[in-house]
Image (cartoon, rainbow, N blue to C red; front, side, top):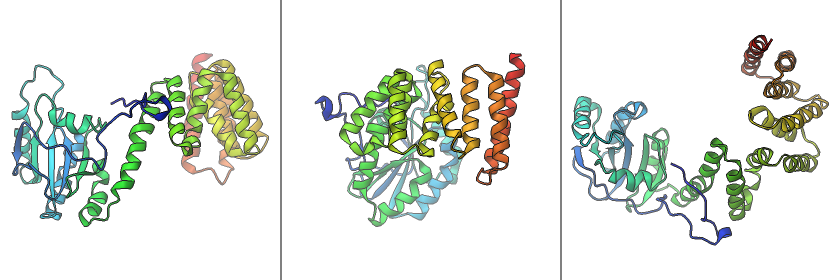
Length: 347
């Protein structure tokens, strides 16, 4: 599942990528076989479609909840479970008997409509792939009008289902939120996870060009990417942010956290990070946080003794700071031990 916001925005003058979104007409349910309950061939009332597999632990844990929903909303909503992606083995040409045996073993515990997808993944492709979803379990709610009203994790299913059933769910707002998620947020996060820093800059540029209000939201991601690709530009942007906020301690924390969390920056970048921490410490505010970040930076610079020194100072500062959460103090102590072990190995 790697959605890309490429060639998709007006900035590039290209056609937007299409995907199955909230508010779109729901695809038909054409599984390989219905295993339990009458086939749901048309949407005459609210329909929950949950995608699952026998190998998915959370999917199996959610079976009793779906049964409860089926009973609670009987006559108002149909609950459907569709088994997909049952096997990655290309030789497994028929998984229906396996799924059928599992459904039978569940008995009354699994008391709703159940179907299994074909080996060509036609249902999974029409729903999950088209909607840009790649994890199980995933739930869809189809409204009385046959259009998708909600897409998400089953943990939040009933909260939306109640509103869809009583007609108070804001489909338009949900569609806008999901469009932002699928078109913008996911591609950026995937680029960050893949350390594709130039893509992070390109994707955030495209997103902000379309929705300028996202500029502040992506400020941290953009600065992180810039420090990976152009140190001098990153320093310029960081100093501009500090100046704009009158060197607010929160801005120092944001900038310093980049060097504390990123483990593959250049030594020169970490040198700038050390200077940022030193400047922040002069302010005598949140000292334990900046000392801890200074320890991480020294660890990245292969300075185990320096890391121990700063982490020890961080622990002592946190222990006397009434604003330091107890759990975080414990975390700092654990990190101190980690740095000490690293220093022993390096000596």
